Length: 379
Image (cartoon, rainbow, N blue to C red; front, side):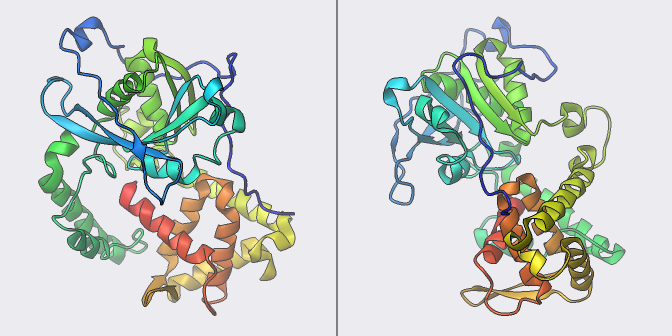
């Protein structure tokens, strides 16, 4: 029996397969909000993305930096499109957001656009990914003057502090990172609100020629979708919100000042899903690498305890050795809790660590490390 490997699919039907629209609280946009000085609709000049992404089109759009001055300074938004497979059946565009905040919608669609949606959806919709303002190729927020300076600063962080001594070292680094981001990209941060990203998406909807928005958002993308629905209810057609966040807990508007992960109960939820991973692994027998070493729950418990004392060095190629200790292993496991599609890779990685990193790592191991690194830079 194999662990699940198929991506969860989203089906948008022709006759109302979607439930009621989830919206955020607040006041919908009025004529006074959009006013006579409406922002100009961007013009999109789609071109092939290049040989690395065959079949995908890319472009950029200029949107207002500050919607209070809609015809003032602009911000660049990067987009990609996977055209509908059935031109005669095409009914519009499907906008997406993979979460984060900070996840690249361009990278997401180019990575999974062909596999994450059903043949029916692919026939009827162009799949659109965009990097929200401040992210990726969309005039990104940067925290250091050079990539080398950024890498040097981030290399001093562990995945999370474990001991009190770790916390004493971690907190000043975190404060310095925050200060550096404000110094380097203060203006971009000031205008990178979810409301402005929602306004951008409504402009992009108009730019692709859709009368109403069709959208699927994951994790943070549900908060973005709800915000767009509340600001522009008349412009929303179909919407799927997958992994819906509690807006009050996410934003801290209920007065809870704890970190966002604590407010949204990420820890307990991830622990629950991790137990499901171990249970499904055990059921998978030879289809899950951890079973070669014993009962998965026992193997992983012993692994985490050993990593607290002695990290495992991994040669990821190019002369680079990555030391995986307890914080890194927990971060790897956490990152794979978003979807069961990667559970086989997680099991392979944990089994390799449990063997002490003996021999060349399977392909899943460096990819798991790279996935955690990408998450660290975007979430």
